[in-house]
Amino acid sequence: MDTTLDLDSLKQHEISGAITISAGQGGLPRLAITTPAGTGEIYLHGAHVTGFQKTGEPPLLWMSAASQFAADKPIRGGVPVCFPWFGARPDAPAHGYARLTEWHLAATSASADGRVSVRLRLPEKAGGPAAIPGKVEYLVTMGDTLTMELHVTNTAEKPLAFEECLHSYFTVGDIATVAVRGLKGLTYSDRAGGNALKVESAKAIHFHAETDRLYLDAPQTVIIEDGKLKRVIRVEKAGSDSTVVWNPWVAKSKAMPDFGDEEYHQMVCVESGNIGQNQVTLAPGAASTLKVVLSSQMG
Ligand code: TA6
Image 1 (cartoon, rainbow, N blue to C red):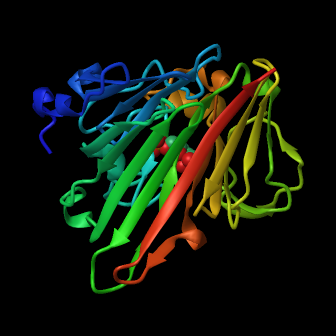
Image 2: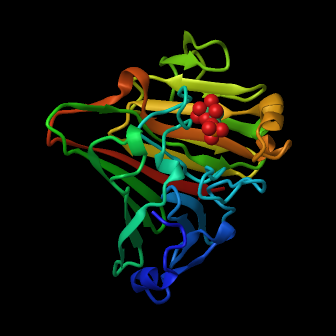
């Protein structure tokens, strides 16, 4: 889809006092969202939630100050939508084409209690030759919590297999004071350690080095405790059997052009998806929903 989309046609989806649509960074169409509980931001590029902040709290989602905003680049931070594959692929973009595509803005709404919803659709031609035959919609709802739902319907005559992940980046006060709970006893692929399969023995994961772990058969809620900000973040989900925990630490931070060398101190990724052995396979006509609800509490 042409990124110079006529902002005027998008403005029909504005809602007074709740949604404003304008050209954001890099000239990319952006929705600025206001609710009684706080503010948020979504780019059509990648259907990317780049901001969510409750009044009186630091931002929940972390964004790199070095992020690129360009039609052919992924945005660094917020919640990238990884689809229809996760990770690197030979001759194809890492984490799929969905985050590099400008999604269609299908609908917006504001409910009586002030929550705001935005529905986005992945253009069918997205991905070119790698495109999968499916209808893909994303529903984002902001209020006191942030809810994201990725709906996939197999529109083909044969089974459809794919991976998916909502690759959430969270703001933390200091990674050294962060504990991630809820994954004890699960098997994970240590992607920072040659993909060796290991079992999580810790009640709480702490960060002292590059951490890149894919937890399998992991439908549980994950808790992020932030000792510095005195905040607890809950990552609740449905329709997701994989959880990824990531912090690039020193060397990987330096290796990424769109990531500041010291920024790893203030972020942690806890990602919700269906990856590897947990990938989704849909029969013809069948549908799936990956749902994530992010909430937080101070003090
Ligand atoms: O989810 C963790 C991970 O797969 C890491 O291995 C790291 O590559 C990260 O995603 C970021 O990937 P990106 O393609 O956005 O640079």
